[in-house]
Length: 292
Ligand SMILES: NC(=O)c1ccc[n+]([C@@H]2O[C@H](COP(=O)([O-])OP(=O)(O)OC[C@H]3O[C@@H](n4cnc5c(N)ncnc54)[C@H](OP(=O)(O)O)[C@@H]3O)[C@@H](O)[C@H]2O)c1
Image: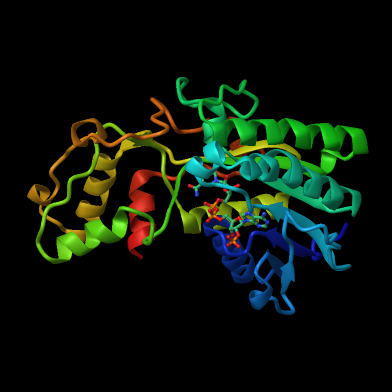
């Protein structure tokens, strides 16, 4: 399949999908996005709803699909039986259909499949999901692999796991930035650990993955396991905000229940770096990207 073929981004309106489409456009690569919203359809916005009986036929010039859309809300994954069906059954079925249609497919998954008790799990480490969302993504990965094996298309499939993604609109950043504008302090949590990446970095890295067409498991990760206090300090350094406008607090002290509190969040990327040249994003780069 020629590299000039178009890309399809399933889930154009998602945080990841929107930034991937922008990265593909910056590289001059032709791309379609999909939406389940009929009022958003257009020549490059195709209808795709996992829950619809309407089959999805990829445009003839498409050669690669990124399956980004998912039921992502932790609470919904726990309480709404349809979320499990979307993540574990309908999404893998759509991926099988795209593989049957001859496309190379990237399925987007999450660091949470590893559970968070082990530091820097590598691309083929065993799963240990601790919450329903993570269990659903973990089972989806297994079902997707089973379809690809059955179809003899494992050389046209990769699964890319991501750590937490931030842009300037991700909570609590708008509230922090507004508070600092007013000269007020923010109270970030010291007991929430994550390995954030900027949405721009993720869009660019996925576009690189699409250009390299590497099969197997890949990881994209922040370079450090940090707390929200560390994140606030990284922004404060960039924005010249005085240190006393950060008053560390904790979810425990505030009595806030957090569904998923991993000890470690960052993903090991040894194989991804060897195969694609992609490297983890440092916290300082995350802050710079978001402020930019
Ligand atoms: N955001 C993160 O920090 C993060 C971290 C690790 C992994 N991931 C993974 O990255 C992917 C994207 O995450 P995100 O945060 O960018 O997603 P998001 O912003 O929550 O958007 C989810 C998208 O999925 C679409 N969708 C949901 N159900 C659908 C259905 N039945 N049929 C068609 N589309 C459907 C939604 O469509 P509507 O717009 O129409 O509602 C929405 O565009 C997910 O696979 C997620 O597991 C995300």
